[in-house]
Structures are given as structure tokens and as C-alpha cells.
Image 1 (cartoon, rainbow, N blue to C red):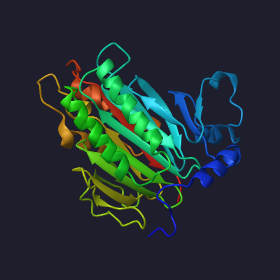
Image 2: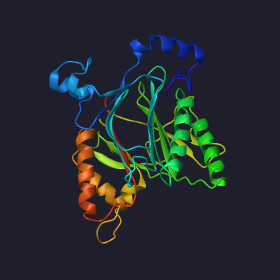
Image 3: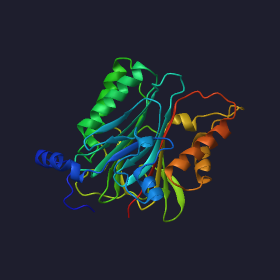
Image 4: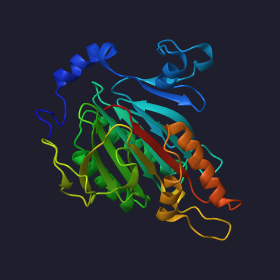
Length: 311
């Protein structure tokens, strides 16, 4: 149970947090593949990455109250408060703008991180409109752990879009509270995330019916009024891993036309060595390529790999 944990933060708290941001706010670091994050830099040099050396000068750093993401091609390391990981997104078309949309954000005082993955039908302008919508909503609710209102507004926007002939597929949104290690998630028709339990060395699906669901004081759980979405909470342990993905991965086909499907993805993941997110991402991509062989790719492919870093 969480005692005295607000679902959102007051204007005074936000104002004070803004003043103290340079001193209190953890960084989010995004680096091109092969570049070190702060943790890997410390491990290899035994000193903090306070000033990036010239060869790492294009590492992108986000401050609190910022949102990063979109629907472009990415292959980045990512660090959030209490979480380290990798994000990969590759549109099937040559253009950089795909139908998979990804976002991460951190609240004003570095306590709550949000990460989202969506799959929009279509590419180019139609997917960019959905990407802008999701960014706007994440930015609006950046200081709110409870995702109910965010999901209601997303649901209403999607309904309005369908009436106008716009197409939309699925979305999964997660909000992680660093001090308690608790994760609130809501799935809007998206494939369920994979969850590695470090304590038992086992993988399973992170679904609304998970036996690990828990209650959180001040955060309404269960069916979100006005939607068909369910809000669920779990707690992550040290070295637990989450893998979020789009259906371009599970619907990939081999040269015989056989689809990988969810069970095939789980088989691949269970046979991958549990490691840091970067090498896991490499091995997952290699396994996907081995499965597909020379078969053409027919859809965008995206995934997050996130590892819990703190006990």
C-alpha cells in the first residue's frame, strides 16, 4: 500500500520542483546504438558521465517535464528513473515515419515515468496525427500517476477519429513510480507485454488478469468508467524485465508463410540469455531475422526492453 502518495501534484509542488529541477531531477538519457549510458560509462571508466567525451557528444538528454518520442525510426538506449532499457522502432516503408508510435516522459519531480507504445494503421500523415495526439495527452497528464483520465480522453479522441474515417489500432500505456517500484498499466487492445521475474527466473505475460495485481491507495483500479479499458497495478523487483512490442513482431512470417504469433515470441524470449537490454535487443533482432529468413517484412516492428535497476 502507498500512504499519502498523490495521484497528481499541486501547482505549488510543480513550481518548487521546477526551481529545484537542476538539483533533484534525474536525467533521461537516450543514446545511439553503441554509445554508453551513464551506467555503462560508470562500469567501464569508474567515473560518472558528467561531461560527455567528444565521441559521445550527440547523446540526447531530456529534463523533467519533457516528453520524448514519435513515430520515427529509432534504435536507442534509454534511462528512466529506476529503469534502464532499449527502444527499437523500424517502419516497414523506406520513409522514416511509421505506424508505430512510442513515447516516454518523466514528471516534474522525477518520481513518475510513463512509457507508451501504440500501433496505428497507416503511415505518414495519418500516423503522425495519432502520434501528436498521444504526445499531447501524455504531456497534459505528465504529473498524474492514475491513467484513468488520460485513457478516457484517448478513447474519446479515437472514437471521434473513427467517425471522421481515420483508422486506429492499439495502445499500451505504463506509469512507473520509482519510490515504490509500482507500475500502473492500461492496455487498449495492444498485445500484452512480457514480464521477466528475476526472483524466480521465469517469463510470463503482463495482462489485466495477472495474479501479481495489487491495490494502490489513491489510484482507482479496475474498469475505467466510460471506456472498455482496465487499469492494473503490479510491483517490479530488482532486475525484472518488461518487453513491450507491436504486432509487427508477432505477425511476422517465415518463408513458408507461418506466422510467429505470441507463443513463438515467448519461445524466442525464453531462449535468450537474460542480460542488459542492449545485448538482449541485439539477440532478439537476430532471432527475428533467423525466423523470417528471406521472407519480406510486411509491417513496422517496434519494442521496448526495460529493466528494473533498484531494490
